[in-house]
Image (cartoon, rainbow, N blue to C red; front, side, top):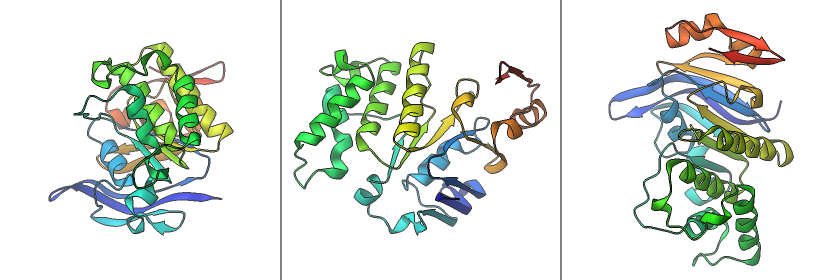
Length: 254
């Protein structure tokens, strides 16, 4: 086992209220982990805790055996990229300017882009199929276009772990598949560990190596999809009738 990220009895929240309580799990290097659960189960709080943007109130989060609180923000940004569900962008950067910020952890004090930085940006723009948007002000984009740009900036960071909070929101089927295929590529070809927060499981199940289910801020279940994704378990998780069937080797939830 090559454990990359480990949570031990983690609690976290806002003010006096804990949203997560006693959460424990580990993610191995090269995994494609999907986190799911009903609204209010603590998924976004988990993302913020993993990204070190909120301080946990109990337990420990370790990256490669080291407490994440011991990293400087720039050093941690070289190891982990977090794409939040929503990003408020006040200044009207062009798409290319915004994507180039993903190279910040590697640039010098003045933030000058070297040749390899520019080559990385160009490669990512082409891979995400947004070359026609490069000069567009980011606040002029549709929700789906913005999501592709957020992914492109994350890919520019070239970190060991990529965490995305509900990246398929606002996307049509074509762009959902494009994002998932890009994530599959970097997971397989580059060995990037992916942690994806999913609002809906159907579009992501076939890509996952493990599923982590949250409910009321606690781990409900975790493991391989075949073990975790059953009608009985999902019905209890979402408190409604859920059915799961296998079709041509794929699990279908309805």
